[in-house]
Image (cartoon, rainbow, N blue to C red):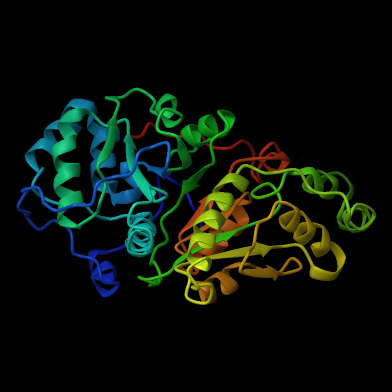
Length: 364
Protein backbone atom coordinates (compact mmCIF):
# COMPACT_ATOMS: atom_id res chain seq x y z
CA UNK A 1 0.00 0.00 0.00
CA UNK A 2 1.32 3.41 -0.89
CA UNK A 3 -0.01 6.23 1.25
CA UNK A 4 -0.63 9.32 -0.86
CA UNK A 5 -2.70 12.35 -0.03
CA UNK A 6 -4.49 12.34 -3.36
CA UNK A 7 -5.00 8.59 -3.75
CA UNK A 8 -5.46 7.36 -0.18
CA UNK A 9 -8.54 5.20 0.43
CA UNK A 10 -11.07 6.65 2.83
CA UNK A 11 -13.17 5.01 5.50
CA UNK A 12 -16.64 3.84 4.61
CA UNK A 13 -19.69 5.15 6.42
CA UNK A 14 -20.32 1.65 7.77
CA UNK A 15 -16.92 1.50 9.45
CA UNK A 16 -17.48 4.91 11.01
CA UNK A 17 -20.89 3.93 12.35
CA UNK A 18 -19.29 0.86 13.90
CA UNK A 19 -16.79 3.14 15.64
CA UNK A 20 -19.54 5.28 17.08
CA UNK A 21 -19.74 8.07 14.50
CA UNK A 22 -22.74 9.19 12.53
CA UNK A 23 -23.19 8.15 8.94
CA UNK A 24 -22.67 10.67 6.17
CA UNK A 25 -24.90 12.10 3.46
CA UNK A 26 -28.01 12.29 5.63
CA UNK A 27 -29.77 15.64 5.52
CA UNK A 28 -29.21 17.71 8.65
CA UNK A 29 -31.11 20.41 10.41
CA UNK A 30 -28.71 23.33 10.08
CA UNK A 31 -29.87 25.03 13.29
CA UNK A 32 -27.10 26.22 15.57
CA UNK A 33 -26.84 24.46 18.97
CA UNK A 34 -27.00 26.56 22.12
CA UNK A 35 -25.35 26.34 25.55
CA UNK A 36 -21.87 25.72 24.21
CA UNK A 37 -18.98 26.50 26.56
CA UNK A 38 -17.14 29.74 25.93
CA UNK A 39 -13.95 29.20 23.88
CA UNK A 40 -10.68 30.12 25.62
CA UNK A 41 -8.64 33.14 24.60
CA UNK A 42 -6.11 32.10 21.91
CA UNK A 43 -3.13 33.23 23.99
CA UNK A 44 -4.18 30.90 26.83
CA UNK A 45 -5.24 27.89 24.77
CA UNK A 46 -3.43 24.98 23.13
CA UNK A 47 -4.47 25.67 19.56
CA UNK A 48 -4.83 22.79 17.12
CA UNK A 49 -5.32 23.95 13.53
CA UNK A 50 -6.88 21.36 11.23
CA UNK A 51 -7.77 21.53 7.55
CA UNK A 52 -11.30 20.65 6.48
CA UNK A 53 -9.99 17.76 4.37
CA UNK A 54 -8.48 15.92 7.35
CA UNK A 55 -11.33 16.68 9.74
CA UNK A 56 -13.91 15.43 7.23
CA UNK A 57 -14.00 13.04 4.30
CA UNK A 58 -14.08 15.35 1.26
CA UNK A 59 -12.65 13.02 -1.37
CA UNK A 60 -15.68 13.28 -3.68
CA UNK A 61 -15.59 17.07 -3.50
CA UNK A 62 -11.83 17.07 -4.10
CA UNK A 63 -12.36 15.08 -7.29
CA UNK A 64 -14.92 17.62 -8.49
CA UNK A 65 -12.44 20.42 -7.83
CA UNK A 66 -9.61 18.64 -9.66
CA UNK A 67 -11.71 17.54 -12.64
CA UNK A 68 -14.21 20.38 -13.06
CA UNK A 69 -12.63 23.40 -11.39
CA UNK A 70 -13.43 25.80 -8.58
CA UNK A 71 -16.76 27.13 -9.89
CA UNK A 72 -18.34 23.69 -10.20
CA UNK A 73 -16.86 22.75 -6.82
CA UNK A 74 -18.53 25.74 -5.15
CA UNK A 75 -21.86 25.04 -6.91
CA UNK A 76 -21.80 21.45 -5.69
CA UNK A 77 -21.02 22.45 -2.11
CA UNK A 78 -23.82 25.02 -2.02
CA UNK A 79 -26.30 22.56 -3.53
CA UNK A 80 -25.40 19.96 -0.87
CA UNK A 81 -24.85 22.24 2.12
CA UNK A 82 -27.42 20.45 4.30
CA UNK A 83 -25.67 17.10 3.74
CA UNK A 84 -22.98 16.54 6.38
CA UNK A 85 -19.52 15.31 5.53
CA UNK A 86 -18.53 12.01 7.10
CA UNK A 87 -15.62 12.01 9.57
CA UNK A 88 -12.06 12.16 8.29
CA UNK A 89 -8.81 10.95 9.87
CA UNK A 90 -8.56 13.85 12.37
CA UNK A 91 -12.13 13.44 13.61
CA UNK A 92 -11.45 11.00 16.48
CA UNK A 93 -8.42 13.07 17.54
CA UNK A 94 -10.57 16.20 17.77
CA UNK A 95 -13.26 14.35 19.72
CA UNK A 96 -10.59 13.15 22.16
CA UNK A 97 -9.38 16.74 22.62
CA UNK A 98 -12.93 17.72 23.52
CA UNK A 99 -13.16 14.86 26.02
CA UNK A 100 -9.99 16.14 27.73
CA UNK A 101 -11.44 19.66 27.81
CA UNK A 102 -14.58 18.39 29.53
CA UNK A 103 -12.51 16.90 32.34
CA UNK A 104 -10.28 19.97 32.59
CA UNK A 105 -13.33 22.23 32.97
CA UNK A 106 -14.61 20.02 35.80
CA UNK A 107 -11.29 20.25 37.66
CA UNK A 108 -10.44 23.87 36.80
CA UNK A 109 -13.69 25.75 36.03
CA UNK A 110 -11.98 29.13 35.55
CA UNK A 111 -8.92 27.96 33.62
CA UNK A 112 -8.48 28.69 29.91
CA UNK A 113 -5.63 26.21 29.49
CA UNK A 114 -7.72 24.08 27.15
CA UNK A 115 -7.49 22.68 23.65
CA UNK A 116 -8.95 25.02 21.07
CA UNK A 117 -9.54 23.58 17.60
CA UNK A 118 -9.42 26.02 14.67
CA UNK A 119 -10.63 25.02 11.22
CA UNK A 120 -8.01 26.36 8.79
CA UNK A 121 -9.04 26.01 5.15
CA UNK A 122 -8.41 27.62 1.77
CA UNK A 123 -12.06 26.91 0.92
CA UNK A 124 -14.26 29.72 -0.34
CA UNK A 125 -16.59 31.25 2.25
CA UNK A 126 -19.56 29.90 0.25
CA UNK A 127 -18.58 26.45 1.52
CA UNK A 128 -18.69 27.68 5.11
CA UNK A 129 -22.35 26.84 5.67
CA UNK A 130 -21.82 23.18 4.83
CA UNK A 131 -18.84 23.03 7.17
CA UNK A 132 -20.79 24.69 9.98
CA UNK A 133 -23.77 22.39 9.43
CA UNK A 134 -21.45 19.37 9.53
CA UNK A 135 -19.77 20.51 12.73
CA UNK A 136 -23.15 20.98 14.39
CA UNK A 137 -24.37 17.62 13.05
CA UNK A 138 -21.44 15.82 14.66
CA UNK A 139 -21.69 17.90 17.86
CA UNK A 140 -18.16 19.24 17.56
CA UNK A 141 -17.09 22.34 19.46
CA UNK A 142 -15.26 24.40 16.84
CA UNK A 143 -15.95 28.10 16.93
CA UNK A 144 -12.91 29.53 15.12
CA UNK A 145 -12.83 29.32 11.32
CA UNK A 146 -10.35 30.65 8.80
CA UNK A 147 -11.53 30.37 5.16
CA UNK A 148 -9.09 32.01 2.78
CA UNK A 149 -10.85 31.65 -0.58
CA UNK A 150 -8.00 29.92 -2.40
CA UNK A 151 -5.08 31.70 -0.74
CA UNK A 152 -2.62 29.81 1.43
CA UNK A 153 -3.75 29.79 5.08
CA UNK A 154 -0.22 29.39 6.45
CA UNK A 155 0.18 33.07 7.26
CA UNK A 156 -2.73 32.87 9.71
CA UNK A 157 -1.29 30.06 11.81
CA UNK A 158 0.90 32.31 13.97
CA UNK A 159 -1.95 34.78 14.39
CA UNK A 160 -3.99 31.94 15.88
CA UNK A 161 -1.05 30.97 18.18
CA UNK A 162 -1.14 27.48 16.62
CA UNK A 163 0.62 24.70 18.56
CA UNK A 164 -0.02 22.10 15.84
CA UNK A 165 -1.20 22.18 12.22
CA UNK A 166 -2.65 19.10 10.49
CA UNK A 167 -3.29 19.05 6.76
CA UNK A 168 -3.58 16.67 3.81
CA UNK A 169 -1.34 18.96 1.74
CA UNK A 170 2.41 18.23 2.19
CA UNK A 171 3.38 21.54 0.57
CA UNK A 172 1.47 23.55 3.16
CA UNK A 173 2.85 21.39 5.95
CA UNK A 174 6.42 22.13 4.82
CA UNK A 175 5.59 25.84 4.70
CA UNK A 176 4.31 25.68 8.27
CA UNK A 177 7.43 23.85 9.48
CA UNK A 178 9.60 26.49 7.83
CA UNK A 179 7.70 29.08 9.88
CA UNK A 180 8.59 27.18 13.06
CA UNK A 181 5.11 25.72 13.58
CA UNK A 182 4.68 22.06 14.49
CA UNK A 183 2.95 20.47 11.51
CA UNK A 184 2.32 17.13 9.85
CA UNK A 185 0.64 15.66 6.79
CA UNK A 186 -2.21 13.40 7.86
CA UNK A 187 -3.19 10.26 5.96
CA UNK A 188 -6.36 8.16 6.01
CA UNK A 189 -6.09 4.42 6.65
CA UNK A 190 -8.25 2.16 4.52
CA UNK A 191 -9.97 1.07 7.69
CA UNK A 192 -9.44 3.02 10.91
CA UNK A 193 -9.16 1.09 14.16
CA UNK A 194 -11.49 1.98 17.01
CA UNK A 195 -9.82 4.30 19.54
CA UNK A 196 -10.54 5.36 23.10
CA UNK A 197 -13.35 7.89 23.58
CA UNK A 198 -12.13 8.93 27.05
CA UNK A 199 -8.31 9.03 26.82
CA UNK A 200 -6.28 11.00 24.27
CA UNK A 201 -3.36 8.88 23.05
CA UNK A 202 -0.54 10.51 21.08
CA UNK A 203 2.46 8.56 19.75
CA UNK A 204 5.72 10.15 18.58
CA UNK A 205 8.77 8.93 16.72
CA UNK A 206 12.01 10.27 18.23
CA UNK A 207 14.67 11.44 15.77
CA UNK A 208 13.56 14.23 13.41
CA UNK A 209 10.21 14.45 15.25
CA UNK A 210 10.79 15.12 18.97
CA UNK A 211 14.57 15.39 18.53
CA UNK A 212 16.72 16.95 15.83
CA UNK A 213 18.00 14.83 12.93
CA UNK A 214 21.62 14.96 14.20
CA UNK A 215 21.80 11.21 14.86
CA UNK A 216 19.85 10.44 11.69
CA UNK A 217 22.55 12.25 9.72
CA UNK A 218 25.22 9.96 11.19
CA UNK A 219 23.19 6.89 10.32
CA UNK A 220 22.50 8.02 6.74
CA UNK A 221 26.12 9.00 6.10
CA UNK A 222 28.05 6.24 7.89
CA UNK A 223 25.71 3.34 8.65
CA UNK A 224 24.35 1.62 11.75
CA UNK A 225 27.65 0.73 13.45
CA UNK A 226 28.90 4.32 13.34
CA UNK A 227 25.50 5.47 14.59
CA UNK A 228 25.80 3.23 17.65
CA UNK A 229 29.37 4.44 18.26
CA UNK A 230 28.26 8.05 17.99
CA UNK A 231 25.35 7.61 20.39
CA UNK A 232 27.50 5.79 22.95
CA UNK A 233 30.18 8.48 22.79
CA UNK A 234 27.56 11.25 23.13
CA UNK A 235 25.08 9.64 25.51
CA UNK A 236 25.57 12.49 28.00
CA UNK A 237 25.25 15.19 25.33
CA UNK A 238 21.65 16.23 24.96
CA UNK A 239 19.93 16.05 21.60
CA UNK A 240 18.64 19.29 20.13
CA UNK A 241 14.87 19.71 19.79
CA UNK A 242 12.83 18.59 16.80
CA UNK A 243 9.71 20.15 15.27
CA UNK A 244 7.16 18.52 17.61
CA UNK A 245 8.93 19.01 20.92
CA UNK A 246 6.69 22.01 21.66
CA UNK A 247 3.53 19.99 21.13
CA UNK A 248 4.74 17.31 23.55
CA UNK A 249 5.50 20.11 26.04
CA UNK A 250 1.93 21.43 26.01
CA UNK A 251 0.57 17.91 26.39
CA UNK A 252 2.85 17.44 29.40
CA UNK A 253 1.69 20.74 30.87
CA UNK A 254 -1.92 19.61 30.76
CA UNK A 255 -1.01 16.20 32.17
CA UNK A 256 0.51 17.89 35.21
CA UNK A 257 -2.78 19.68 35.86
CA UNK A 258 -4.41 16.27 36.24
CA UNK A 259 -1.52 14.98 38.35
CA UNK A 260 -1.99 17.95 40.71
CA UNK A 261 -5.53 16.70 41.36
CA UNK A 262 -4.37 13.17 42.16
CA UNK A 263 -5.23 11.76 38.73
CA UNK A 264 -1.87 10.50 37.51
CA UNK A 265 -3.19 6.96 37.02
CA UNK A 266 -6.46 8.18 35.51
CA UNK A 267 -5.04 10.96 33.36
CA UNK A 268 -7.02 11.36 30.11
CA UNK A 269 -3.82 12.14 28.17
CA UNK A 270 -1.25 9.43 27.46
CA UNK A 271 1.93 9.85 25.41
CA UNK A 272 4.15 7.28 23.70
CA UNK A 273 7.65 7.27 22.25
CA UNK A 274 7.77 4.69 19.45
CA UNK A 275 11.28 4.67 18.06
CA UNK A 276 13.44 2.49 15.83
CA UNK A 277 16.33 3.07 18.27
CA UNK A 278 17.45 0.11 20.38
CA UNK A 279 17.28 0.54 24.13
CA UNK A 280 20.75 -0.68 25.14
CA UNK A 281 22.71 0.83 22.24
CA UNK A 282 21.07 4.22 21.73
CA UNK A 283 18.11 4.61 24.09
CA UNK A 284 20.02 6.27 26.92
CA UNK A 285 20.58 9.53 25.06
CA UNK A 286 16.94 9.84 24.07
CA UNK A 287 15.66 9.30 27.61
CA UNK A 288 18.23 11.64 29.14
CA UNK A 289 17.24 14.34 26.67
CA UNK A 290 13.54 14.03 27.52
CA UNK A 291 14.35 14.12 31.24
CA UNK A 292 16.48 17.25 30.81
CA UNK A 293 13.53 18.95 29.10
CA UNK A 294 11.34 18.06 32.07
CA UNK A 295 9.11 15.96 29.84
CA UNK A 296 7.55 12.67 30.82
CA UNK A 297 6.67 10.08 28.21
CA UNK A 298 4.20 7.59 29.64
CA UNK A 299 5.45 4.67 27.56
CA UNK A 300 8.68 4.24 25.58
CA UNK A 301 8.96 1.50 22.97
CA UNK A 302 12.47 0.89 21.60
CA UNK A 303 11.97 -1.38 18.61
CA UNK A 304 15.57 -1.81 17.37
CA UNK A 305 14.48 -1.45 13.76
CA UNK A 306 11.39 -3.68 13.96
CA UNK A 307 8.18 -2.52 12.23
CA UNK A 308 6.13 -0.02 14.20
CA UNK A 309 2.71 -0.96 12.80
CA UNK A 310 2.02 -3.97 15.07
CA UNK A 311 2.94 -2.01 18.21
CA UNK A 312 0.77 0.92 17.16
CA UNK A 313 -2.10 -1.48 16.55
CA UNK A 314 -1.86 -2.45 20.25
CA UNK A 315 -1.51 1.15 21.47
CA UNK A 316 -4.31 2.44 19.23
CA UNK A 317 -3.27 6.09 19.34
CA UNK A 318 -5.51 8.80 17.97
CA UNK A 319 -2.50 10.12 16.10
CA UNK A 320 1.06 8.97 15.36
CA UNK A 321 3.89 11.20 14.07
CA UNK A 322 6.92 9.93 12.11
CA UNK A 323 9.42 11.49 9.70
CA UNK A 324 9.78 8.33 7.59
CA UNK A 325 7.06 7.48 5.07
CA UNK A 326 7.96 3.80 5.44
CA UNK A 327 6.70 3.87 9.03
CA UNK A 328 3.70 6.06 8.16
CA UNK A 329 2.64 3.55 5.51
CA UNK A 330 3.17 0.62 7.86
CA UNK A 331 1.08 2.27 10.56
CA UNK A 332 -1.72 3.12 8.12
CA UNK A 333 -1.81 -0.47 6.86
CA UNK A 334 -2.53 -1.56 10.44
CA UNK A 335 -5.38 0.96 10.84
CA UNK A 336 -3.53 3.75 12.68
CA UNK A 337 -4.06 7.39 11.74
CA UNK A 338 -0.49 8.34 10.89
CA UNK A 339 1.08 11.70 10.11
CA UNK A 340 4.26 12.45 8.17
CA UNK A 341 6.58 15.12 9.56
CA UNK A 342 8.69 16.22 6.54
CA UNK A 343 11.73 17.30 8.52
CA UNK A 344 15.43 16.43 8.49
CA UNK A 345 17.92 14.72 6.24
CA UNK A 346 15.58 11.86 5.38
CA UNK A 347 13.43 14.24 3.34
CA UNK A 348 16.35 15.32 1.13
CA UNK A 349 17.23 11.82 -0.02
CA UNK A 350 15.76 10.72 -3.37
CA UNK A 351 12.96 8.20 -3.14
CA UNK A 352 13.10 4.83 -4.75
CA UNK A 353 12.12 5.12 -8.40
CA UNK A 354 13.18 8.73 -8.91
CA UNK A 355 11.81 12.12 -7.92
CA UNK A 356 8.77 12.64 -5.76
CA UNK A 357 5.53 13.16 -7.59
CA UNK A 358 4.30 16.73 -7.66
CA UNK A 359 1.37 17.40 -5.41
CA UNK A 360 -1.94 18.01 -7.15
CA UNK A 361 -3.89 21.20 -6.31
CA UNK A 362 -6.17 20.69 -3.36
CA UNK A 363 -8.86 22.42 -1.41
CA UNK A 364 -7.94 22.03 2.23
